[in-house]
Image (cartoon, rainbow, N blue to C red; front, side, top):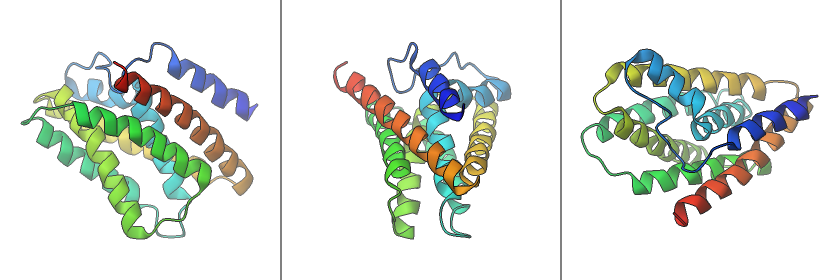
Length: 191
């Protein structure tokens, strides 16, 4: 049952996917910003997986990762609202899907400084692209930050489930992300 839900979500995410970061119809306002991370599969998967991965860190070490993500994303978005260039950030977002998928599948042990640096880079790439899309719509940025934090929370909750279930979620989500991340990266490189 659980696997069929994960595969159903995965199938719905690939329909109509062509770029790492389409506009998703984002216009203005808090609600538009809040809905944006929930309708873009790249953001949705990375936020959920970061929450799961952070929850599975040793006691007391994981909570800083989602907090850092939201802050780094906001700083990069604010930077992008004044300086626009997208191509490298698009590629970094595609790579973030692959990296988070690999981290979930491999359960690699990373030093604390590498965890923090990696989360900051991934967050900055996502934030930069959001900032480009948002222009000067501050309320939309606030909504996006709230939705991002909530997605991290959902992922955290999934990662804190009993070990066998959390491992299954990690492996399933990681596998989906590797496939979709590879597709996304290929579509960017061949576009």
